[in-house]
Amino acid sequence: MGSIPAPQVFAEAEYKPTVFLPSPYPKGTVFPFTLAPVQSKTPLHDVIAEIQDLSKTGKIRSLLNTHGAIFFKDLKIENAEQFSQFAHSFGYVPHEDIGNPVRRTILAKNVATANEGPNTQPVYPHNEFGLSPHFPAYVFFYCFSAPDTGGETPINNSIILYQQLKEKHPEFIKEIEEKGVKYQLFYVNSSRDQTTSPGNSVLQAYGEHVNDTDDTETARQKIEKEIQRLPTARWIWENQSESNPLGDLRVWQHLPAVRKHPHTGQTTFFNNTVSRFLNAIDAETLQPPHINKDGRYQPPAFYGDDSLIPREYYDTAVEIIKSTRSLVTWNKGDVILLDNHAVQHAREPWTGERKLLASLWDEP
Image (cartoon, rainbow, N blue to C red; front, side):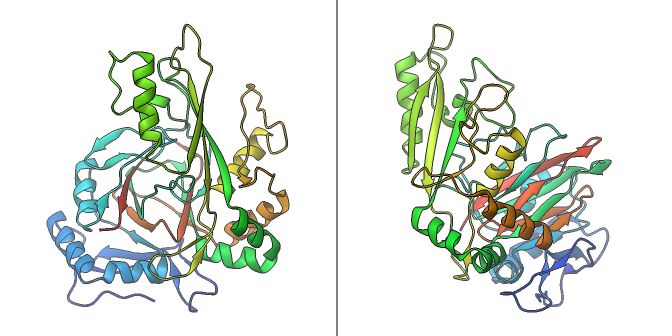
């Protein structure tokens, strides 16, 4: 169990959705660890000063090593600008998106909407950018407006998921460690389709340096130069036509599905394969030819040799996640900090107004 040394702005707080992590964590390890200001009207500059001190002394890193996630309650953060100031106080390096498959809108420095998909649809468990070789070390979520009902953010521990999957299906872990995993990402040309959700467009994902005056060949060269910053990526252009001269873009990533935590050395099931599995279940595309009702190719993740991963393994993974997760509920001003190496996150459907902002960071 973590603790905060006195005197302090923060103290450990009660939080009903907290769960206790099973082995390999020590008995009584809470998830997430919850902090709240001791005084109800603590000024933001005092909160920031305390975070800076806790970060510089290694206390934040120690709490993340122990718990995987820190939930900050009752911060009274009012807007994206204040959230940006709070996130910057940890001293991390801002993460640069390359090939982001999710549509987001920038609202403040290093702050964007978390996901602009429809509120009726869930987001399934995944490590942030787990389907890319370029992923953030830390993820912040901030509640700007809370939903009327639903809208929780389920979080689960990737280290536990690895341990329990290995106990139940050692043959699966052996195979996925040897072969890795392969994902396909499809980006439409934004000049044709600005409404795809949650999928991002070609230009929004890779077109930072493309100008409106660029011809098709120049635009493609600039886009491909960005893709090449991800050394594991392979791509093809599709659907070129007179009305769509640039074409749409299909990218494949072949990556490890299991990694070592850089600080604790623990093995973690770090990937987006559960998300892709559940997405394919809902779309009825788990089996070949993986074509959805709209005629688009929507496969699950594959083993690295392009073979299909048996469903039973992911049925077990979903059971483990549901039995060990914490359902984070939101009030305006709440913030959660996730160690992306150790924690997966998801999203539940909701009703009413709800806005969750995100901030992604790398190691300092």
